[in-house]
Length: 222
Image (cartoon, rainbow, N blue to C red; front, side, top):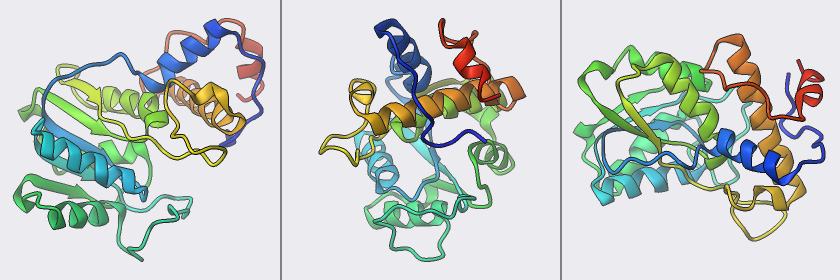
């Protein structure tokens, strides 16, 4: 099990740049998409960003996938009791004017792989050419590679991420500042390790090797 906040090695600027590209995938651009795929979360950012996509008119339909996380840990602002993540997000989107008939939900999954696999059971992805996906900014790399693994390579994909609040400052965590704070450095390195590990397992599309100089550090976890 990779800890959520592993010990962080000394990192060069080049290593930081390479980790940023792997974890945040911030260089992928898409102007409009047929579908908005929302990875379930108790973080209110999932609702806010999904609503933004609808209001901007950049998606035609919305698919929300998420039951309850296996960790059982919910965001401090969660007020929806026993509702699943997908149900909560859907209900809030409808309250803010999103038409119910363009929303699909899958609410049995408990992790990113299940989010995609279970969603495929209720939505025909062969009928679309492009999708945006909503996720936390520091989870983009892992969830992008999960979609790549199980959804047709003919579908163009791009992140539509939201940023989470850092406990150590008033700033939000993003690809520009993650290396500036101990907590976010550790969180992002944990995400990088999970991308490597799940790629090795075959659960997601793997990256091309390990960042140079971190080979021994990575081997210490696997």
